[in-house]
Image 1 (cartoon, helix red, strand yellow):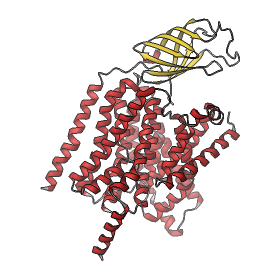
Image 2 (cartoon, rainbow over the protein chains, first blue to last red; image 1 turned 90 degrees about the horizontal axis):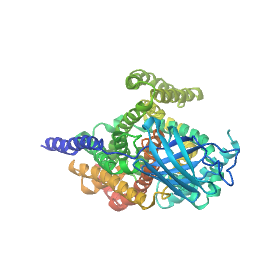
Image 3 (tube, rainbow over the protein chains, first blue to last red; image 1 turned 180 degrees about the horizontal axis):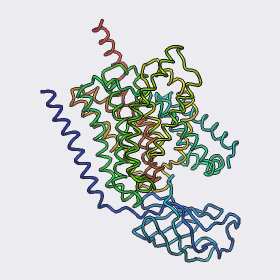
Image 4 (cartoon, helix red, strand yellow; image 1 turned 45 degrees about the vertical axis):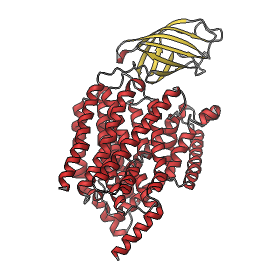
Length: 141
Length: 420
């Protein structure tokens, strides 16, 4: 009797939740997540070219790295100063606003070939159009 | 380039912080490891980086962290071998259907609730580089893990190891550990296969062949070490070195197969001979350096990746609260309910649930793997680290509240009288 009760309890407490989990996995397939932009990016035009006080020219690279958590992202410019901009992603639009400057861009391309086009305005620089290409989805952390 | 001065300075600071905070936590009846975990967090951006960003940047410049990471990974490989070594299949025998029910529910309940939470968190804290299936399965696995070593230590400290509830907890935690690692291995393969150049069938067939070789070939060779130990009551340095090499080769095999270094180390430990003297000898040999030197480096490295309360605003705290509530409900509630249903008195069932809810160090290991393979975002990582800290911290006081030491001693005395 006790054994039968345990079998029933097992089916109820283990079997049913496993079926529920399968349902959850199926339902989750329909959920869209924010576009992935994390990783290293190369910038095809130099947004710091027309700056009054150009960032350390020796260390300047036309690149930035992005650390992403869902709709929030942290853009770190490789400008010698480590300027960071906090960004939000809404659909295919990226908006970044920080004391260091602003970025407004559109994210395009498939997961493996993601690009970004828009306007960047850094403190002390003339606002400039840019195009950035993701080099590889970043290893996080 | 390696800056040796910087690395040695980092290690010294980490060790001092780990021992100091560990000592303070012991004073408030928390396990030493809990304090060491917190020390790691305090050295990261959550406290030191927030209070003194200049000091933090000078002490832990990002370029120097790869060396710290490498050392901590070596420590983890040895630690996972030790965890596998401490796992004894005989713990699982003789507990019948009740233990099977309790341990399986203690995995399934938090796993399902983790999957359910993923429906809400996936569009908020993940991205389209990760599939929902990968994210949800990882959330489930991370919610359902139990810190076997911490649990065993708490039981020993409270004299509960030989009690009915203690042996049941050990059996359930052992099942949870093995199941959790199998699920995690599957998730790692699932995520890595989509990005790897190697075909999926190589990973799957290779993993199967690897497990079969380990269980049916290597396991039969290992008793030779035990025989040698029995002859001299010790192992020569050369033989200990051979064991280390075997652990490393096993770890390399699983890494090459696309699973993870740590699975190989864990399996090597799990298939080692399990006579108490031999296990105790090896644990003593490997544990000291790992626990005192290398694990604090892992905690610090984890802390440096954790940003509790940094960025994300109020939403992050809300998500953290959800994750913590779900984790406790699933693990503590699920285990307690199943144990009660299996015939355990409420007090013992609740204590078992509290013990199973201890996630500790094992959770941090899993979370670091998740962050490395990109299945969770930095914010999700920080939230889960916070959950690991909260669930580990609450274990001792909650256990004392539900099952006070005086009551436990009285019951143990009663048992001894009846036996006499």
